[in-house]
Image (cartoon, rainbow, N blue to C red; front, side, top):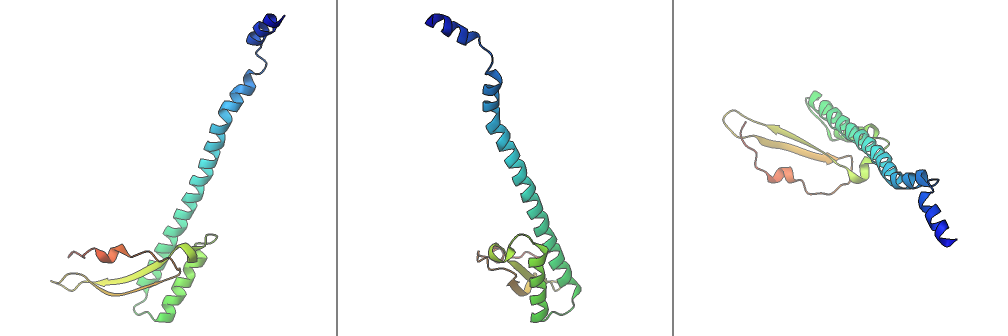
Length: 131
């Protein structure tokens, strides 16, 4: 009687689909979550790119800039990057670089704002090479 049940259990195929689903389900959940994360990353990357381009465009259009105008430009970045909170984990660094003929490029001024991220600015550590 026991041996018949064991042999019958080996031939029973009723739970095959359930076992296959249990094996595939973690992979399917991983693919769905990875797709959502890639979409979120792409949206954030586009917003940061738009913020950089818009900020550079606003600064490049002005012949002279006051501190108040720079503050307004920095304030606009938080609206461009919504719904992401740029003020905590981001910072905009504006630099004015000029080059007189025959001399290497020099940095005229630099301002940072629109966030409170406090990483070291490694760009300044590199020496500017003549164009």
